[in-house]
Image (cartoon, rainbow, N blue to C red; front, side, top):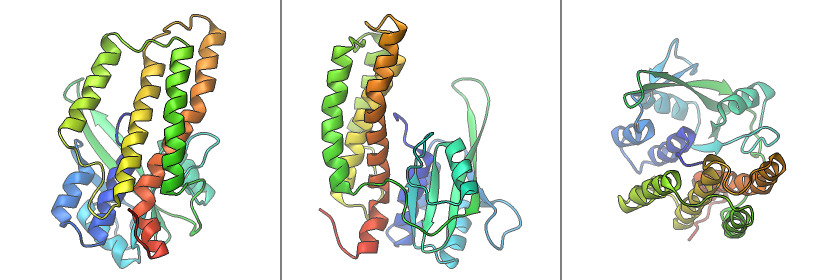
Length: 264
């Protein structure tokens, strides 16, 4: 939850590109992020992998007018619409991009090489057929914002009740990294997204930070297996809410366009 999903970057900046709000060079630069290179394979009319610029043009020519995000987890096909083959690949990758306007989806496969601190990352997006149907379990932005506010309160209460370590070097480093990203003014979403989507995504990342600290900061005061199980059980629905909110934020551009309205 702490890191921005690759599917989120590709969908957000792909939507801006498809809407004519950014140049292809700027969109691809944002999509790739800190990775070395991204390619897309399996596109109609292409015999091998191609770069993102050509891939986006090809998808547009096939009728894709928008891109949605899926962040599935076991037992929770969040953002998926089928068929089973695509869902299985997306679940294995824990993320996917689903085209709107034409039945194509993209699932990333990540290749890493090199020592710690100097890892070379290449990503191949596999283009596969998808079912044209409403995505599973994606809330509206308004629903997501309300659910997140409650989830943030619940997460804080749970961590306090279970005496989860909220300080120390690991927690402080994570908090410092989060603050540094915010202070740099990192653009959470691409041009064309409503302000509420930015608020929802930022809040979802804050909730995700709390969850990550709870899972990664040792045992805190929960010293028994039953107490550890209670922590996981208490935080699971909060984590689910944060993932749903992320998908709602990334998908809001397409959802608003589909409804033909705007959002404040």
